Image (cartoon, rainbow, N blue to C red):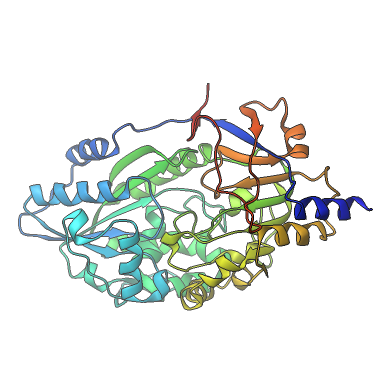
Length: 437
């Protein structure tokens, strides 16, 4: 019997040795984010006029403590006797519909009852002066009718390009508040549009719209808030680059540079704009752009979609295999609206579909990139945000021994359920993110 055939036999027999692995990351953390934001707002120098209508722009990115942070902004505005309301600022997400974007916010707890302010959603925009900007400049109509607009967004490395401004307040100014029309105009220019034109559009919005304040959030490798900062509008282009570098320095990573099979339990827009972060998995799938040098991953299996993604499976094209249960949850209208807006069509392609994890592993063994078991380096993760706890094959464990910040734990037991699916992901002892020592 060949080694590949032996591996397939072991899988069928429910024998696949895996081990718990823990990674220790640096963990700068704001202990009470709402309290920290309250202090930032008190000292930011921005004052709202009594009776003024204030649009609070909230995006589709998952942010730790988002509900409490938005509630804090609402409370601050009300203490100044202003009248706040929430507007979605997420470009084409939510299926590029007003109703879909309200649903996305509700999935994060951003509802009138929970944050204390009404949610108003429209895909309508007004056009702002273009001047030397290479594309038209749009701005959310409802926000434009307010007396002031405040943004809140996470600052982080982008999933498609590198630049002085990536994901953050400048991108929300340009694409988030520009709705579907601005997203189409910028994404239609490809990577240069995102890297070069997006900041130019954001500067036009700052110059001609009613934006007064941006709340920037940076997270650590454990998906916790590492910094929260209230930035007056004119300071956003000055201060955001340093926050981006802070976010980049605190990104988690996979512990190996060569992985034969990566098993991802879930993807979704709340995890990454692309479902799973290309900065983590080393795959871009953008024609004309070089693929990252590392990590090198032979096969990627996606097992499910998060509930908060509402069927948006943007980024599934980065995977090679997908479970049928994940495929059944895909909202193709929402997914394709997102993918077509970006223009990076390969990221929306459907991977090979299988019914069970055992079938997926059997299929993976047939890939020309896969070495025979037991030489295969296999890692299983919850998602690309949660990388402190992993499951690793024996070969991967051998490669990890002696790595700084990596601890090898006990065998995973059980690996499979009787119906051929992986058992519920467990972190072993000390559930949760582990700080560096």
